[in-house]
Structure formats: structure tokens, C-alpha cells
Length: 331
Image 1: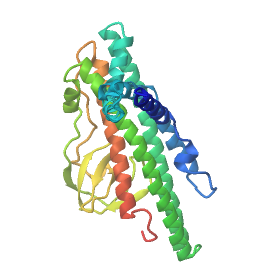
Image 2: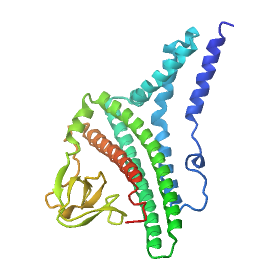
Image 3: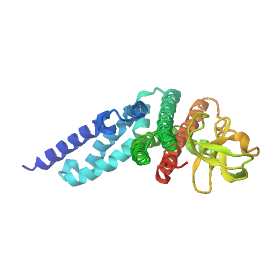
Image 4: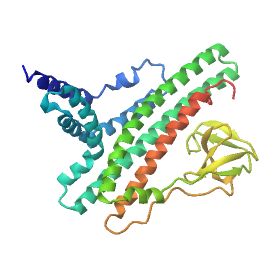
């Protein structure tokens, strides 16, 4: 009888770990296809990119949970303490699990750097896919809303019907953002593991690349001419606002041909760089890297940048949904 609390706690922890490892179905995450969503393909594409971020690099959390459970008192029968320890151990394991795995598998420090380079390259490529998928889904929502607006404006759709459709599109967009937030949470967790590994392999490494890959402070500039504000840095991206000639906006460097702008009303997007002749050009640059680990430094810097960019895109979408910009009949 004295061993029953141990058995109970062990069974509870085992079940918890199994449940934690179970992925929900895609239909459970994004709902079934009702045939009415014009952006269903883009939604499926975004959600599908999220599967990657729940894979092997997060296995350290399970290891940490078991270790933390033991620390918390599992062996003594204190199952409440064990569960607290499991939670603490899980958080710790998730942060250090990746680097611990690297140390177990690698023959030497150069092998650690080589594996980190491969993993960061793969992560960066997936972050690019996720960013593109989210941009394309957002663009689709905005284009769908624009078509409804045009139909109402031309008299081919009743205004009340247009209002109902706009409300539905905006509701779907808000659900899209929740999916993107979930994915972003997984990206952030994985990012913490990469950061820990990077700092462990190269003490102070993250601070050095953060210094070299900083986001410049915004520069307030007046537009030389009226230009549209796009949600993403793409000429085909839907318009979400406009900067009038001589309007002063905050600008930051953007991809080639664009600057990121923020209006006084808090609307953020991208505008043509040539409308702001004095705007800062170029993107964040990585630090010059010493021989032997330069590739890791460069990849770590671009990984941080990609993570920041996705977080910012999700934040911009949240502000857009809250303000209703792009999802109103007038405009």
C-alpha cells in the first residue's frame, strides 16, 4: 500500500507525457472544410508548416519532465511534489535538451558546430515557408474582402449581405491569427533551445549576433508622394492603407524596394522605398564571424531575425484585425 502513491504518480506522469506528445488533427485545429472558405488552401498550408515545430528538437522537454519529477519527490511518494518538479523539469529540459543531445551525439566541438549549422539551416528554411504561408493567407483574406467591397460598391451585392460577408471574413482572419500565434509559440520555444545551444557552444554568442543584427530605430520621414501601404513587402500584396504626400511616418529598412512604415494611427505595413529618398536602406547584417564557427554565427543571426519577423507579422495582423482595416465596406 505504501507504494501506491508512487504508482499513481508514475501513471499520471506517463499519461501526461503521452498526451503532451499527441498532436491534434488538422481538422481539430482549423475546423472542417465547409466549402465556403475561399482561402482554405492557404489556411491548410499555414497550419501544415506548424507540424515541423513539434518535432524532435523538443524531445528534451519529456526528458526534463522525468528528471524534474524525480527531483520533486516521486521516489519518496510525494506525487504533488513530483508533478511540480515535472513542470519545472519540463521547462528546464526544453531549454537544454537540444544542446545535451548535441553533446551526446557529437564527437567533438567541430561536430557540434556542424550539426548546429545543419539544424539552423533547416530551421531557417522552414521559417521562410511559414512566413510565406502566413503572408499568402493574409493576402487571400484581404483580397476576398476587397472583392466583397467592390461588389457592394458596384451594386452587384446588397449592402447587408456585404456586411455579413465582411464579418465572416474578419472572423476567419481572427481564427487564422490564433493559428499563427500557436505556431509562433512553438517557434519561440524552439528558438530558446537554439539560443541556449548557441550560447553553450560559444559563450556570449547570442549577445554578439544580437548586437550585430539589431533592428534599427525607426526614422521619421515625410513621403515624397502618395503611396499605398501593403501588408507584406510584395507589389502584389493587397493594400491596407495609404500614405499621402508629405505625411510623416516612422520608417525602418525593409526587403529590397520596400521600407516598413508605421503611421500615426499605428498601422504598420510596407511602402515603396523610393517614396522616401532618405529612408535607411538594407536589412539587418550579421556579425563578422571568426573562422571555424562563422557559419553558426551567421545562421544564428538570421534565425533570430526570421523569428522576429514572423512575430512582428503576427502582431501586425492582430492590429489589422482589431482596427478592422481592410475588412470594412468603406475604403
